[in-house]
Each structure stands twice: as structure tokens, then as C-alpha cells.
Length: 463
Image (tube, rainbow, N blue to C red):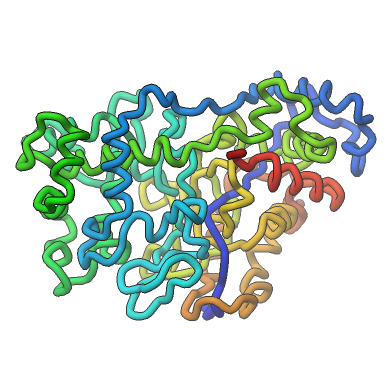
């Protein structure tokens, strides 16, 4: 069943995951409704101290400003905002990742080649919806974040010794042109990732007959990237910035790896978000959170309540793993069925799994989920409280709800397949009920409110 979704708005790419671990030593064994409100204010810090210790919660450290290359940063700034990286020279990285709009476009699904305008004002025209939401770029350069793209298409190998990409040419590494590009990429994961939107016809490259890049066959990565790098090195405005960033480099040896590495330098330092009140609390400032936020943090962490921390833990507030949490599918999808099987396209028996996003600045980066299916964090939490019901009733609940885009579809024909492959232990043990129809996470309305307050206020970067 396919339905036109009338103009969905403001949806970005968070997957707020939950899980269950009954073996934790500090679970609320009594499972008392609203039990977090029975904890005296004076004991909140002591309770949280136990969670922090056992879960290993740590603040996120900012990248070392002393290691920044200012000239490389400036070159990356230019390139990030330059439409010359696209086939028709009409779309830049910043078109879908607007720095002044919290590194997103504030749309459920981006509008790529052929669209016009920016952010929520961008219109489809003769363009195309992109299959997946534009994710926020905060902290993506952190070395712990070792899988990029929602399906992890660019990632470090398990032993960390190499970077795996969708490009057979680039993966050769030791051969001719590929070797030179890899050397310029400098083992930087974000630098590798930056190269791939340029290859996508709908995102940046354009359609056959429109430009030289688009006229090349899709697998001709070497030639496409060579033409893009040539555009930059032939532009006199770049000659001095390139020399400043790469002293001694001859312009004729400038390649796409230098482009990616400069963009990565820019993203690393421009989009670092480590000074949240949550981080301040973990560093010892016990007054940085209100009592309600502390109660919300307990709900976030407790195995018998929301237990978000099971997937959104560690310094990143992400396990950097892949889960199927029954997200409704909207938009063009990734295949002829308008479906999106996520990691399933890359690995067997991993259908409908998508990467756990980080949560800092989550209040600023709606809409949420890999396809922008939910407009608010409240919608996300309600999905987790009744995931099966949310999945199967999404078309009825959301159809015609908003007034931004025509031609978004709600794909429901594969909902049974989504449900059959739901990630193990994502929800409370037995939470889906004996017939798989029961509730998901266990959380009262009052607990949800303090959880929302914690996430919407304490996780925002303080400038």
C-alpha cells in the first residue's frame, strides 16, 4: 500500500532506541509507577552517581584546537559551501547541511538536484527527494564514531586497520590514482565520507545529459572525482587557499582526496558540540542540571524505564551499532518497492537496521529517524511505547497531517517484514506481548515528561 503523504515537515534523522538488560545491579526491581518521583531531591545525585559509574557514562571531549590547521579549515569552509562540487553547479554540501540551521535542512527528506531554495523553503520543482534524512553533523569527526552514513557504508574495519567504502576503485588503495587519493585523505573517515554525495545523481551529480559528470557511467568514480578536483584547481579563487592548506603541492597534483580532507577539517572543528549541561554534570558540576532533568536522566538510564542508554550510552550517546526499531518507511526508499532495508543491502540477515545516532543537540535537529518519519521527540517516545501499533497505524495517523510536501509516500507493504526482523531485545523483555502486540518501553506519562525535559534542554551545546 502506498499513500501520498501531504507535505511532511520538520523531520530529521534521529533513532531514539531502547533496550532491556534485566541483569543490571541497579534496576528498579519494584517497577513502581513514577518511582523516580519518590526519590528525594537530596538523593538524586547519589542515585545518578551509581548509574554513571556502572554504565561508564563519560563527557565528550572537544577536539584539540591546537591540532587544527587553520588554512585547511578555511579551504574546507570554501569547499563545503561551493556548488562546483555538484554536476550542475547548483548544490553544495551546505544546501542540505546548513551551518546556520544546526547542520540540517529541517526537512523530513532532503530535496537534491533540481530543487530550489534552502531549508524549509526549498521546493521540489524538477528535483528529487533523497531517500534518507539529512543527518546532523555534530561530532561526526570523533574517532569513536567509526561508521558513517545511516547504513555504515563508510566505516573502519573491525581491527581499525583500513577504511571500507562503497567504491571498488577507492578500496584498491595501493594502485596508481587511488593511492594518491588515499594518501591525501589521510586516514580520515569523514574525509572519505565527504566524497560519496558527489557521486549520487539525485544528491549532487545530476542526470544523464545535464553535465559532464552526469554523462559518465555511475561506476566511473575515478573520472567523476577527477573532473570535480579539476574544477576546483582551475578556479583562480582557490589557488592561494590550496597553497596555504597544502604547502608545496602543485595544482596539477591536487585531487579529490585533498577536497575531502579539507572538508573533514572544517567539520571537525566547526561542528564540535561538547559543552552541554549534561557534559558539565558528568565533569562534576552537580548544579548544572535541574532536579527534573536529573529525574529525566534516571528514566533515560534505568533498565526498567526508558533505558535509552542501552543504545545511546558512552561518551557519544550512541553505541554506533545498527538496530531495527520498527520505523515507518516514508519517501522514495532505496529500491523499486520504495522500501529501505538499511544495513540489509550491505549484509545478510540485517534488514531494516539503521545506525544509532548521537543525541547532543537533539532538540535542534528535528525531524527524526532515518527517513524523518517523526516530527517531535514526543512522537518518537510514543512510538517506543507501542512500536507495533505505531508502525501499522502510521499511515492513518500521519496521512495529511502536515502541509509542506506533495509526493512523499508511506510504504506499508513490507511492514510484516519489518516486524519479523525486529532487532533482538530492543524493547523490554516480553514487552511486545505474547502475540507481539503489547507495549514497548515501560514509562509513565510523568516519567516521559521529565525524560523529554532532560533530552530537550540538558543535551544542547552551550555556546
